Length: 157
Image (cartoon, rainbow, N blue to C red; front, side, top):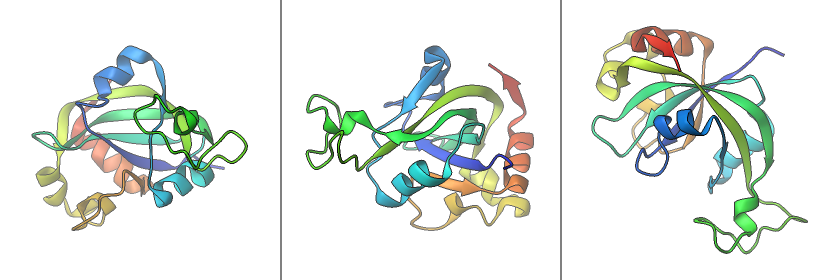
């Protein structure tokens, strides 16, 4: 099955592309939205590409790419009461939340801002551009992936 593509949002004050580069491979944990959870559990697979998007910063932008190293598996932070995002309803016997492992692949020489995306007709239908779209994990088409990477002028990390 061919690789799929995704946009993952992260606040850089919580976890940035630089953090992922430093960590090598990292768990993408703490997702507490059912639609995003379903994507992590059912759709995001090893080998998929990720556009790494910094939200809640200035400027909001896609700043690089990552590769999924391990597909969805139970998010153990949900049943750890000391974690930043515990869920007492989740347990090892009944996991509710899922995560994946990522490795940074590229940093963009030109972060691709929301304004830049909006100005490019080739990506005007990206979910991230829809008013009110707050989902932290979104599918991206192959064409959108290629256009955004070209706009960002990637360099390997």
